[in-house]
Length: 237
Ligand code: URA
Image (tube, rainbow, N blue to C red; front, side):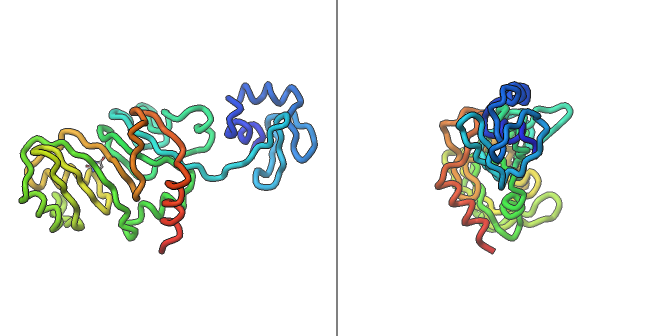
């Protein structure tokens, strides 16, 4: 890994700023002063100091974002704004990607990480990871719809969903709990019942709740408790 990337990830600023820091001769690798930003280091074993600050390498980073509407769940796109475009400079260095997809108009919790193993497990259909959504719809919901969700719904392509939860909060608003993630799943489940979704917000993923203190577009690192949920998920077969 390049020394300028390692130092930027730690939070010392942009590539340009880090280049200036290096030029000042205040960066050392295993006791030797390093000034070339292209110098390669082994982040796991090299002891790197900027002045008297020891750079602690983080291999895997996990953040939660409150995804705003109008932004796509991808790492990069030529035309559209992506969730990764909303990260700050420091987090741009970690090559994070979103774990799963929310539709462009869906808001709420999305986890971004550079841990491919976690993403793979969290998205595996075998894991039945729970996702919770709030849905506002265009017609009245009742016991008929709740029972249909409970029994599983046959979608437009013939796929029958697993049993899902529909907790009716008021006539046209419900909490939906699903344990799988087919394309446009919730919209298509409602559509099969003749109901249109007006807006959709994910409030929880794998037992991690959206931090309602995050404004749309904001993100933060997962807390220790939230990380424990992830470690648990990774350790289960
Ligand atoms: N179901 C949908 O229809 N859309 C989403 O974004 C997520 C679940």
